[in-house]
Length: 84
Image (cartoon, rainbow, N blue to C red; front, side):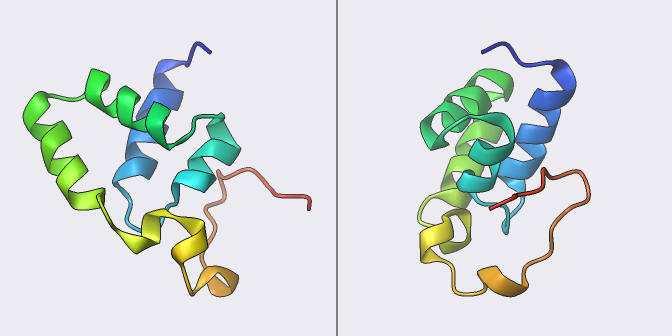
């Protein structure tokens, strides 16, 4: 899958956000967690990538199944609507 520069920027922004799950990125852009990690590694300076990985590793808020506040979460107006 080839991503546009603006999509890459948005994925990086979402990956840095504490409350945005990898599942939300998958839903909106079709990239699973491993693909997001690979994209971040490719697009960021090595020191920034290491800082990001340290920040998100083990963070409960990055995985939908581990979250306890899903029902009342804020949804960005740019995020796709889930029709399920």
